[in-house]
Length: 226
Ligand code: DC
Image 1 (cartoon, rainbow, N blue to C red):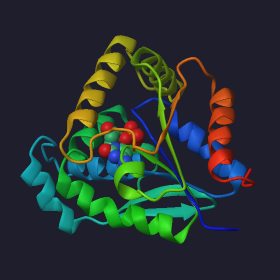
Image 2: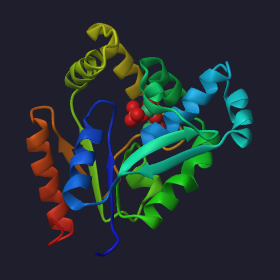
Image 3: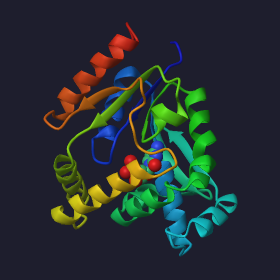
C-alpha cells in the first residue's frame, strides 16, 4: 500500500485521539499521539521538581532526558529514560505541565524530528496541535477537529471520572479555556488550522458520526483508500 499520512489537529477534548484511533484501525495504519510525547516532557519536568513556568530551567534538562515513543502491538507506549510511563502521563496535573512546556520553542524543536521520523517510516494518523502546519506540512489529509468548549469540558469530565479521578466540571471548563488560550496564543506553533485543512466541528456529532464525516474527507483526498 502507498505510504500516506493523515494529520488531525484541534483543541483539547475535541475527541482527536478517539477519532484517530478509529481511523487508524479502519485503514490498518498507526495512530500517533503527539500530546503523549509532550506529556512525557511535562512528566519529566514535574519529576525533577522543576517549575514549568521557568523556560530556561525546562530547556536546560532537555539534553539529559531521553523521550521515546515505541509501537508495541499497534499501541504507542511512552518511555522516559528507558522507563515505561503507562497512564502516569494522563494525570490531570500533567495536562497543565504539558501545556506549559509545549509553549517553549526549545521543547518543540527537541521533539520535532522524533515526530517526523515516525511519519516517514510509517503510514500514520497523527494528532496534535501543529501537525498540519509544522510537523507534516505535506500530509495527504489534514483535518481540524473542534467542538465548543462546554461540550469538550463535559467529555473531559466524563473521561476523568471513568478513570476514577475526581473531576469538578466547572474547574475542568476553566482549565480547558486556559489551555485553549495558552495553546492558541503562544508564539511557537500556535494552534490554528493549516490553510489546506478541512474543518470538522463535532459539537453535535457522536463518535460514530464524527468517524463517518472524517472518512468522507479522507475518501475525497485519497480515493479508494477506504
Ligand atoms: O492532546 P493532549 O491534551 O494530550 O496534549 C497535551 C498538551 O500538549 C496540550 O496542552 C498541547 C500540547 N501539544 C502541543 O503543543 N502540540 C502537539 N502536537 C500536541 C500537544
